[in-house]
Amino acid sequence: MSYYKHLFSGIALSSLFAVPTYAGVKPETATTYQAPYAKSAPDIDGIPQDAAWSKASWRDIDKLTAGSAPSSNEDFSGRYKVVWTKQHLYILAEISDDILIDSHPNPLEHYWDDDALEIFIDEDNSGGKHLFTYNAFAYHVSLDNQAVDMGPFLTDADEKASKANVRLYPHHIKSQWMRSAETPSKIYWEVQLAAYPDNYKDEYSPKEKAVKPAKLHEGKKLGFMMAYCDSDSPNGRDHFIGDIDIKPVNGDKNRGYIDASVFGVLELSK
Image 1 (tube, rainbow, N blue to C red):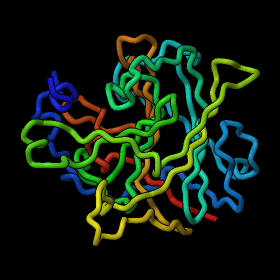
Image 2 (image 1 turned 45 degrees about the vertical axis):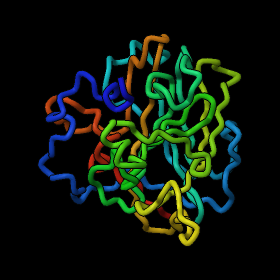
Image 3 (image 1 turned 135 degrees about the vertical axis):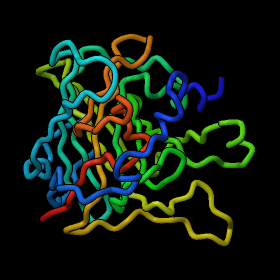
Image 4 (image 1 turned 90 degrees about the vertical axis):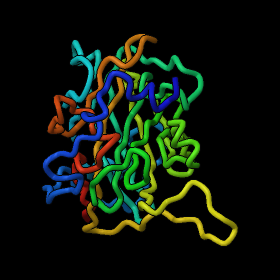
């Protein structure tokens, strides 16, 4: 079975690509998180002691998006902070998870079925469909600190064969996590993230210039959402928890990897 068919097996295509009332274009949405400016960027080492984090407020990751609800706070609970510099966003996630699972050695296979931090970002906050485009990104950051997402089909033959372009993005994300010494079931996960615009490409011809990340500035608004894939056994993902309460389409709240219109709004402040 192809990757694409496996991903959507059991899901009616009419449900998957159903167009919500906003018709795939993001409506005016209130800011869900204000990220303060960091004069000094935090070190990405899994140790949350950098001065930059003290200026940011916590936001809970507590909205059930798919699967079953966690049985307890030890099973899963989480929250995060964001700060920024002109070059990068910086994310600190505090995750309580009593079982960490990474049962698929190939980072490009079944990455949603292992424990992973998932970061959704839409650089221009435009909303709209993005499953096989770079209109927005849905990075799965794995326990081995690799970032995975799907991009456009590379060839017409790939599209006809439903062969999705699953890739690693080491130049987009730097990640490191570490267990808490006081509470071993708690981990601190730090991420440095470059915000690439929607004209990003995977490959460039010799005459093309590579697209650079967007410069960040006070007042900029980005589409943004945080989530966590929680697996308690090698059998697959048990809980998928986010920070946005997504309006379901045909009963399905798991829309973030399809449509950036369900993201929240991250506003950069000083």
